[in-house]
Length: 202
Image 1 (tube, rainbow, N blue to C red):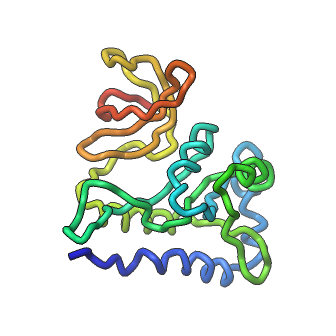
Image 2: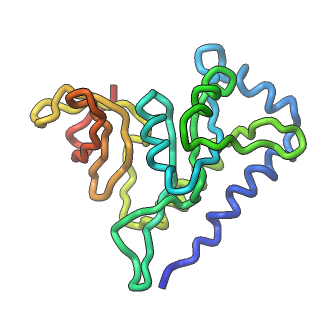
C-alpha cells in the first residue's frame, strides 16, 4: 500500500503563506544580505509536467543549482525502484533573479516562478523550508544515505577511475553511496553513476 506523505504537498502552500506574513523590507534586503558576490536565492520554478528532469539537466549543465525532490514510483503492484518528482510541475532553483531569470525563463519547459499573489514578487524559498523538503524526500526514499555532496555541486573524478580528471555537476544522489554526475564526454553531457569515494569536490 502506498504511504501517504501528509507533510509533502502542504510545504508548497506554506511557502506562499509564510512569505505573505513577512515584511516587504525583508524580501528587498535579501540580496544585500548575501553581498555583491552572491545574490543568489532559492526560488520555486513552475515546469511543464514530465519535463522536470529535462529542464533540470539543461539548467544544471549551465551552472545553475536545481533541486527536484523525488519519491518512489508506485504501481498497482506496489513500490518500484523507479522515481518520480514529488511535486510534479515544480523545481527549486538557486539563481540571481535579477540577472539570471531571463535566461532561465527562456528555457523550453519553464513556465514561470512562484510569486506572491498580493505583490507579484517572486517568493524567496528559505533554507529551512528546503531542509524540510529534503527530510520528507529522504523519508520517502527510505534507502538513501546522507551524503557530503548535494545536487548541483561541481565535483572531479579521482585518479583510478576510467573517468578520472573529468569534472561536472552532480545530477542525482543515488542509492548505496553512489552519485550520478553529468560529465562532458566527446562533446556531449553524459550521466555517469559513480561510487562517492571516487569523486571529490572542486
